[in-house]
Image (cartoon, rainbow, N blue to C red; front, side, top):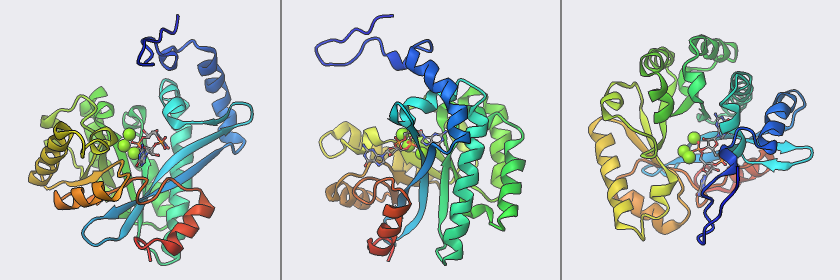
Length: 280
Ligand code: C2E
Ligand code: MG
Ligand code: MG
Ligand code: MG
């Protein structure tokens, strides 16, 4: 393997996709330890309702502080974990922490939910719905306290099995969202049959919407499509006020992005909850 860079700086061969690269092997062998030794943390990013102007929940985003490599982005290590069965204990770790966190928020009187990202392999795990049901029961939480984010490609790995598990999760009252909508190979036929309540329009369309007419059209049509199917829309990647206003005028239901709040650790989050007009 050789990394070739052209003049745009884009790598034609991307080492991130080489399963044998030294860094990937190190990451894979260190992840088990990371779970056991507390190198992982969940950051939380607010999701807001554009009509009421209120924060209705937070998305849990994993962070890994490796003792030697330093901060490793989930965009880098999640795809590797997904190749292995380690993805199961990792997801259980995330669910456990996120569920305890939402229990705490509710005890403090905030009627909000927490969103957890699932991997393709999680969706194929027939034990997952029952496990999630038990975790919610254990903390006396209704299904509505939890939202699960899944990608189109994860569903398309084995649509029949994914659909069965999604139906079971839906029966628990858990919210289901399609993440990164528009980037996967999407099947509108499945979208119609899925028990999802929300579509998240990917960052990549939202961020350039004001400059790119095509992106604006994609966002507009996605909102229309979703609304026709009685599905709500979250715009990801809202980085400035103009974007927020534009989305509002387009009838977009919910938003998430740096302009509203970045993914935050406990300390920053507590401050945000005290100071943000979306929360107070
Ligand atoms: P995602 O679920 O689509 O999460 C949104 C990503 O966009 C996050 O990146 C978030 O920090 C970033 N983001 C949010 N607002 C903005 C914005 O205004 N501008 C820009 N440029 N970016 C924004 P992050 O935290 O690096 O996570 C990347 C991906 O890793 C996630 O994409 C998700 O697919 C995956 N991931 C993160 N945590 C978990 C996890 O606990 N489990 C699983 N299976 N996947 C996870
Ligand atoms: Mg997500
Ligand atoms: Mg997303
Ligand atoms: Mg994304």
